[in-house]
Amino acid sequence: MTNAHSARVWALETLKHSAAIARHFVAVSTNAEEVEKFGIDPANMFVFGIGWAGATPMDSAIGLSTHDRDRSG
Image (spheres, rainbow, N blue to C red):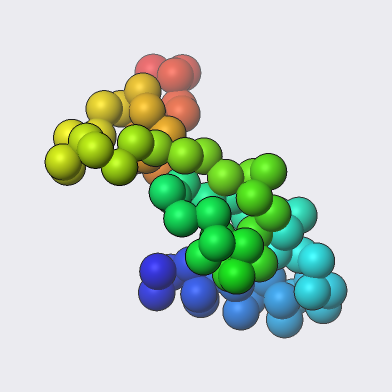
């Protein structure tokens, strides 16, 4: 969350528009209320199951942040 808050401050200062967060951020969470409170549009929220007890498969929503997007080799 420290990085998220730092990125939020940077985006607001750089883009100079309060809608910047809703337009440019996504969330991986189970808490839609906090996502919206942060300023992220709930339509940009990837939900993951809360009953996983720490198991986070790479092909799940929570794996988005760790997934290797570089397939070029």
